[in-house]
Image (cartoon, rainbow, N blue to C red; front, side, top):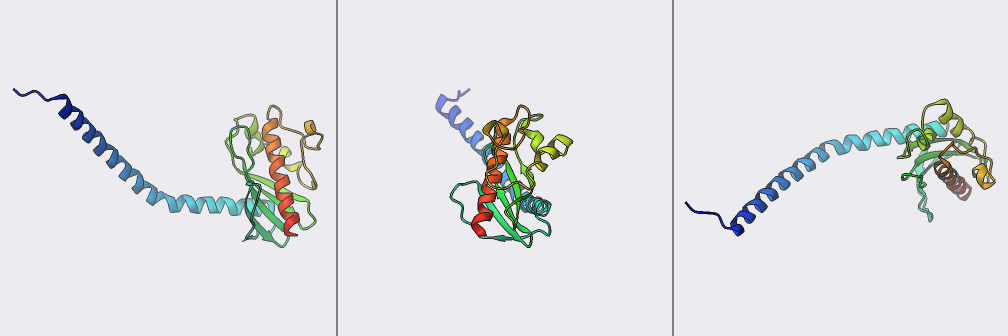
Length: 182
């Protein structure tokens, strides 16, 4: 009876693991190619819904170059602009759409995506009374928006000052974009 040497044993294990990894990678690539168009379509629908939520009548995307890194896309409509902004919150990026009217005042905000702490920062995006109250206080604001702790006029979410500051930062970026575009 022949015994397998260590070199052959390690080579056999390595080849087996390589084959398993290659098959799994090919399966993941196949699943991605099938689901990627559907995911892109759902993200586009979500974005359009957010634009229409903050900008009456919706808008068409316009080109805008941002130096701050906060601004994603800008949409122009009859009522003003909808600006997609991505400030950093407590747990990561807070993607939101901010509507700014032709008069330079906030028409509304819609939080599209976030990874904030449930029950604290996540309240900003929640479809609850507290979430709506937090978002609604931005309507009609202009100039520099900040939380009361920083000398501003926005009531921060309890236990979520960083998230509240991130939303204010996003609103300020959107107001700047609207002012720059005119």
